[in-house]
Image 1 (cartoon, helix red, strand yellow):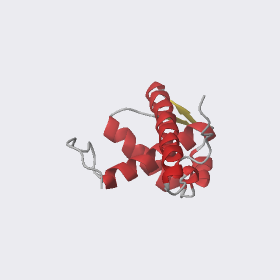
Image 2: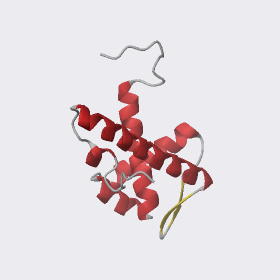
Image 3: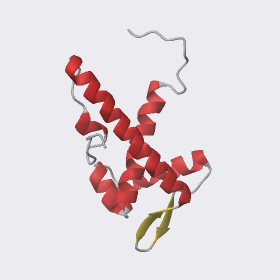
Image 4: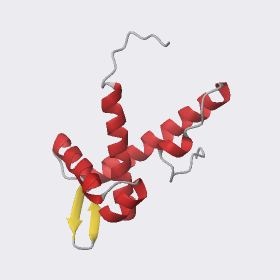
Length: 119
């Protein structure tokens, strides 16, 4: 068991919810549609919309502009989208480092649509 004097910023449950929500936002931005994003994430469209709406409320900023033709990221949404991609990439790097040490490969469950090659 790892020991550290640093206190975690959020609990494990909150972190799991945040990752799921970030993945929902990434899918919505990349698909340009909440329906397509929900299909990609394997959840219902109302559930995905609720995740994103709750994230917007928590941040106090709109992340997506909803139109009759789909969704587009707002300025705030673009920032969080880019940071979310970095989170996925960093998690991928961590998995790359852990796997040879005997850890289970989780690449395809973290952010499956993105390549993990270092650039």
